[in-house]
Amino acid sequence: MPILKTLIIACTLLLCAGSSFANDENGGSGTVAETMIAGGYVYVRLEDDNTWIAASKVPVSVGDSIKYTGGSTMKDFNSRTLKRSFDTIFFVMNLEVFKTVDADKHATAATNDPHAVTKSTPATPPKAGEITPLDGGKTIAAVHADSAKLKGQKVSIRARVMKISLDIVGKNWVTLQDGTGTVPGNRLLATSSEIVAVGDTVTVSGMINTNVDLGSGYTYSVLLENATFSN
Image (cartoon, rainbow, N blue to C red; front, top):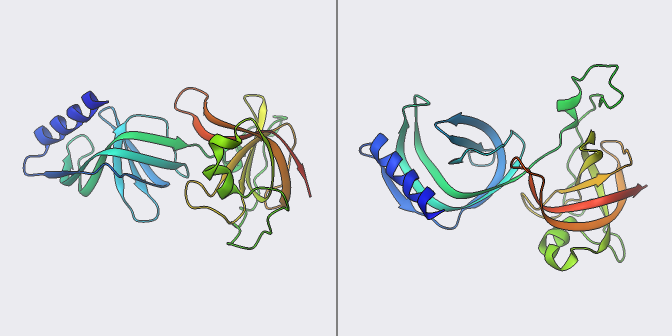
């Protein structure tokens, strides 16, 4: 990774005479609002503050949550490949993508596809305190905070179904929120053989797994596997 950092800085300095940079190892997180690919890099704009970051090309889509650390902040960066300038852009060394599974993206499948997901009204994220935690259960924020300790354990959560996609690598993928946590730790992805309705508030139980790598850039810091649902 130090080689990558050196190459990034060297290339940007060669391409951007007059630009300046400052080291920043803290990084941050956010939700992807826009992406562009150029010169072996992915450029990402975040929703909340319109921050631009760049990293070695990995699969990332609008709506995904990301975490990034390490790198250099460039001022007045001009990309000849993209033919545009950035007032500030952060070239990062480490980019972790939390993929979203959006049912709407699969709604364009052929109507005779038995696994097609029909378009539904987007669910409204629950506000803090709107969903009462289960007695003896966990919140999504607690699952993320204690994921290492909870790995391999069965947990139960009360949460709202935000998105669902059917029969992806043999599983249904359900995105849950309960009004706790901050991006990207305010959502939990569950895999299940069951089908639930977007917008429903449900009790979900499953096994916690961590640092799951499905390849092709699809990595998950926390998954709730083999989930079952009840009202």
